[in-house]
Each structure stands twice: as C-alpha cells, then as structure tokens.
Amino acid sequence: MRVIHTIGEMRAASRAAKARGARLGLVPTMGALHEGHLSLVRAARARSDVVAATIFVNPTQFGPSEDFSKYPRNLQNDSALLEREGVELIFAPAVEEMYPAGAITWVTVEGMSDRLCGASRPGHFRGVTTVVAKLFNIAEPDVAFFGQKDAAQVAIIRRMVRDLNMPVQIEVCPIVREPDGLAMSSRNSYLNAGERTAALTLFRSLTRAEELFKSGEKDSAKLIAVGTKEFDSEPAVRLDYFEIVDPDSLQPVLAVERPALAAVAAYLGKTRLIDNILLAP
Ligand code: PAF
Image (cartoon, rainbow, N blue to C red; front, side, top):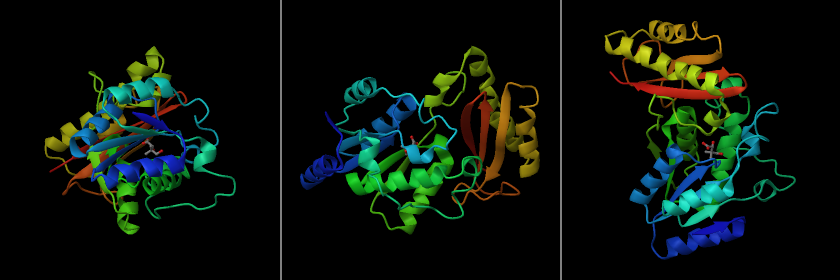
C-alpha cells in the first residue's frame, strides 16, 4: 500500500493502474474511519481491481464556527485499517496541495446545495462538490463509493456527475448502524455518555415515521409530525430538520406515493448528527 501526498504522484499512480487494465475504485473520506467507511472499501474491493481511498479533511465544507480544527485526524490508524482491507493507494494531501493560494473556482449544484443540511450549513455542499470534483480529476476513478448516510450529498454528487458528464460511476452503500441503531459517524466520538443515549432520538424518530408509513399513512405532514414528536421528550437534542423529500431532487414531497427519503438532523450540544431512511411504497 502506498500513502501519497501530492496530486502529481496520485495521478501517476492511478493512471499506471488503469494502463494495466485495472478498474479503479475510489473511496473518498475525511479519515477518522469507522465500519461505515470500511463497508465502502469492501464494496470497492468487490467491484474494482484497484482500490484507492482519499483522506482529506476538506476545509471548504466546514462553516467558520464548525468543527474543522477539532475534526479527528489519525492518518496512522486510518492507514493501518485501510491496509488491512486491501487498499492499494491512499491519497492524503495537505490543504495547500488541494487549495493552492489563489484558487477561486467552485463547483455548485444550484437548487440542491441549499436543501437539507445545505440550509443550516451554508456553503457546505459547495465545498463537498468542489473537493469531490477535484478528487475525481486527480484520481480519475472508474467508480466511486459513497455512504447513504449522507443522502443529500449522494444526490448532489450524482447530479454533479450527470450535469458535468464526469466519466465516473457512483455507487451508494447502505448506512452502517451501531447495534442499538445509531448511524455510524466520525462525529459520534464527540458525544459524552448522556449525549450518546440521547442521540438515538434521531433513529427513533425515523423509525416512528416508518412505522406509521407502513401502517398506510402517506401524508408527509403526518409522518413528519410523528417523527418530530420524538424530540419533544429529549431536551438534550435540538432538532435541526425532519423532512420528507424526493431522493433525487431533494424537494419536499407532500405524499409518499413513490420512494421518498425521510431525513433528520439534530444537535447534541455542539455535535450535529444526521440520519435518514427510505420510505418505499
Ligand atoms: O462524506 C465525506 O466524508 C466528505 O463529505 C467527502 C465526500 C469525503 C468530501 O470531503
């Protein structure tokens, strides 16, 4: 396994792999790897010949008062995990390598980047699409793997790839959960014991909405009401949004007649967590 820090070396390594006829799978991450990330790597292993993972805490997707500086970073530990999973290439550039002074170009998916997390984290998805476009340009993967937990991110990246004719296939892997249902996230490590217990409210709220949906209720307002009600009894959790949206456009749906995404975000202290579930008639 090679750990690469420069764009030139990464591009040369991926081109060399592709010149040998290998199908290159890319797993973009910000490090602090958990089982959710490793499930992406395993999917990449199964569906490509050479797997590259990127580890880059991308400053442009964090707001000024967000956790960029305290986001967990442990390249050594992450590299060991990735090596064990059979990753051949790790691309771990410095911020200055990815954003040299004077860089002023952004990739924005208009009309979607301000939906869901984009509403409370202005500029977040613009940072995501810009860095993912750059990673695709650098590594030139045949296929890239993302987790369903960031469902809005997935929809926005798919749209970027479609609109900009990027020659990469996007694969989405299911959410990996802790045994009690909490969606795995690098930010779960910020939670104290009380917050960890209260964090289950997110999954519970989605489960309640899903139960009501399965009992025949299609009206989004009623499904949202039962989901948000879960937060009334948990003062430690501050609901950001609970929405039911079209999984491709991220626009709200009034009634779930086709598969729709129930998506939730909430704060536990300063930690912001997200989760979602697909409601499929
Ligand atoms: O999902 C993430 O970890 C990040 O948003 C990504 C896709 C690696 C871009 O920085």
